[in-house]
Image (cartoon, rainbow, N blue to C red; front, side, top):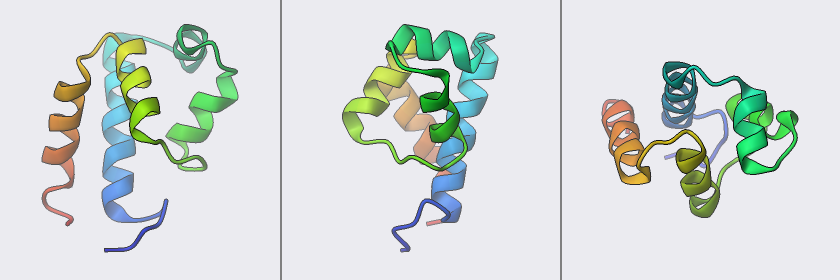
Length: 83
């Protein structure tokens, strides 16, 4: 498996993140405010310019008011076909 920000599984992961944010009706700015980060932080994550570590993933899920384990499960489902 490629360790790239541009791999198909990582793109699937990003799609899950973006879909979760949109489903909650949050803007990138709203999520950034909850994380106490600039809007560009969220934009770079969603655009694949910045990779998330597990602690950041948990913080992002919580900022979206989503249980991190549920978001992880959604991510696994999304990437199962590409790994």
